[in-house]
Length: 101
Image (cartoon, rainbow, N blue to C red):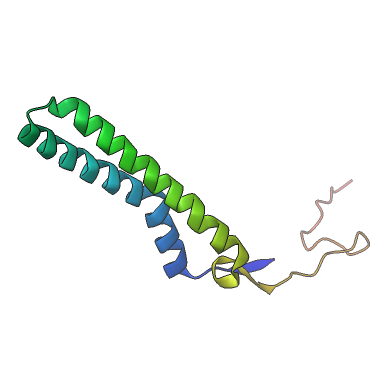
């Protein structure tokens, strides 16, 4: 079976699944760090809390978008062709080894 899946869709989905949550985590941590410094709080704790809150929000967004993607044919691979199944009666194309005896 030969399948076709658009490369642009694969790159978009890969970015959304792997890169987007990390970017959101780092952005949330940076915002939490800056906010804590201006509020006179511990920057490490607020960076961790806001960073992980943003990260889990991004995962929730991905799961929400996944439900819509499952219903759409836009992200599904397309069957291009199906190879013919060989029957057991057909001979192999590989030559048999014969002995000189």
